Structures are given as C-alpha cells and as structure tokens.
Image 1 (spheres, helix red, strand yellow):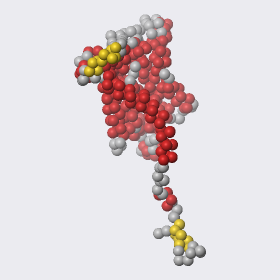
Image 2 (cartoon, one colour; image 1 turned 90 degrees about the vertical axis):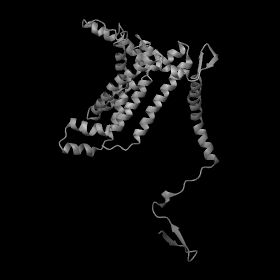
Image 3 (cartoon, helix red, strand yellow; image 1 turned 120 degrees about the vertical axis):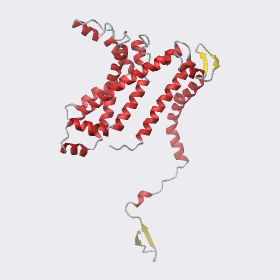
Image 4 (cartoon, helix red, strand yellow; image 1 turned 120 degrees about the horizontal axis):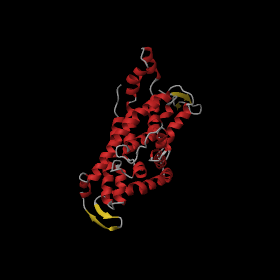
Length: 319
C-alpha cells in the first residue's frame, strides 16, 4: 500500500508518494557511452602496465621454457618441447636447490609464525608508547631486502660486528656465512627478523577482531591468560594464521637477496635458493630455457598455494 495525496487540480486522481526507504531500491542508471569512455580512461594505464610488465613476460617465459638457447645467440634457439621440464627432476643442482628452499621455508615458518603471534599478543595489551613499538617492529618490513641483507652481512661477517663482540669476551670468531652448517641458519634468523613485523601486524588485526564479550565470558568462567590464549585466541585466529602461513611461504619461495648478497649460494650450495638458482642458471650458465622452465614450475606452486588459501577463506569455520 502507498500513501496518497489528492490532486486539487485533477479530481478523482491521486499522486502516489513512496514510503520511507522505498527509494533505496531504485534501478541503477545504465552506463552510457560517456561512462564507458571515462572508465576506460582511468583503467587503461593500469591495464597497459599489467600487459607490458606481467602478461607479455609470462608469454615470453612460456615460449622460452620449451626452447634451448644461450643469451649470446638467442636467434639460434632450438625447440625441445618438455625436455627442460623433465630435466628439473633429474638435475642434481636443481634438486638440491629445491631441497634447500624447502628446508629454509620450514625453518622460517617454524619461527616467524609463533613469534609473530607472541609479539601481536604483547603489543595488543596495555602498554606505553604502543604506536611507537608497532612502528619499530614493522620498520624492517618496509626496508629494502638489499639493504637488510647488506646490513646483516656486516653484522655476521668473519670480522663483523657480532664476531667483534664475541672476541671481546674471549670467544673465537664464528664463520656464520662461510660454514655450511651455520649459513642457512643465519639467513633464516635474518629473514625472521625482517618479516616478523608483518606477521605481528596481521595477527594484531585478527586479535582486534575477536569479540570482547567472548573474552569477558571466559574471564567470568575463571579462565586465565594461558587458557584464553589456547582455547579462544588461537582457535579464533585460524583464518589469520592460515593467511600468515601462506604469505610467509610465498616470501620464502621468493627469497633471493640473502643468497645473492650474503653467500652467493654457498658454501657448497647450502643457501642456493631456487630463485638464486634460476638467476644463476640463466645468466651465468647461459641456459635461460631451463631457467624459464624452473620459473614456471615455481609459479605453478605459488598459484597452488594461493588457490588453497582462497578455498580455505571461503570455508565456514566453526570454533
């Protein structure tokens, strides 16, 4: 039913007045030619940049992955089909690089996820200068990876800052970056230091989205801080934890600067990450076709992780 108002000029007729809120259901005005041109003008720079710097390189990468050639003579490329992809699973250096990358990711995740949660819980509480503490923790994340790797090289070098401190206490210098037993551990520690702020900020967002009444109900039931963390906080951070794990896994998969600047993949290939191996294969060993095939495999692995993340985020989680 609609309210009516008599029209004094036309007897017997009425003017329909919409009820309150009825205007919210109006149909949208169809886009005309002017709107399309305006939208295209705003989107075209982004689309051009995406095409030039993303899709065209991907097409070139796919083309190169089925060819065998050198950068000195790219015109002499030979079509080899899937030979480069089959070679990935038989080449010892590539298999070693994949193994090193896997160990690095496991060690990195094992440290950065729980430490990020602990830092988030700490800075989520009542503390002085909380904003300043957040800034200090997040600062390494926005610092260039090249700068971070160079700084840590000065710290961990044989004659670096850390060994200087150890020497002052009468401790012999430790070969952090030149010993195969310590080089990978040193890079893991450096990467955890750099990415800890990102994990903490993501967890902090998840903590602040937990309803306060849930925490209050647990306190009324007599739950202490540890029980609230185990039975409420961690289960309700399941989505955030999964997001942090996926993001840190992708970061570990893309790690390049530490191997390139700090160790050049050594000693004895103990820090030969897959990204550095791709770079070395393409430019030092002059085998860009094989490097392109490895890149596609890594890309497919990263896409798989992203698809799993999207699938899990759409799942209804019950706590």
